[in-house]
Image 1 (tube, rainbow over the protein chains, first blue to last red):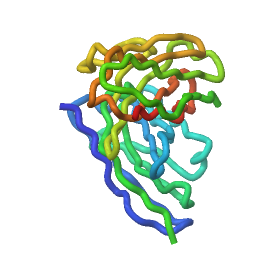
Image 2: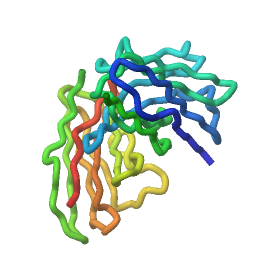
Image 3: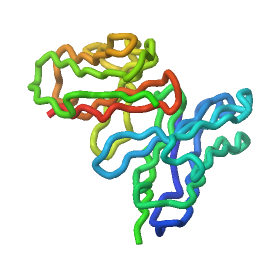
Length: 116
Length: 105
């Protein structure tokens, strides 16, 4: 069974940092591109970015709204992807999801709240 | 960036109705278009990939069509469990933008 589970969400003050994890199982993680998508409360879906596989040199792409502040990484030995978020603002408050590139499996999401 | 437009953002329908949900891209994206269904408090669920491919396990009353800039999600006979929000997403070029969503009410 394919599973993805995000963790690491919580409350952080503006300007702060947070690191999310996406733990996976049930598929060949090392060969898979992982995407991050977020959803602000009561709003639509926003693509945050992706990290590709080792075969694609772990290339990353970021949405303009997070470029330079967010960083994707992955540990293929642990089947886990990470999202390091720095210089957070209130606009980053959202549920953050990870998903496989095919879009067929998503985690349940983790809530990040940026507030003073 | 490619802009994805879904209009209307809400749609009133009844059980048994045939429903069509449009999505327009600001430039041609071929058939690099996915459709998702989302219910409150849940992660999105993939319904249609590459504009018209039915995801395994998704009921056959769902179908997708279109290419280039104009796309449509059709529900042939609306069921109670289909009341949700539907999003299109282009996967032609990053950033992989979503439409604003269409809520079926």
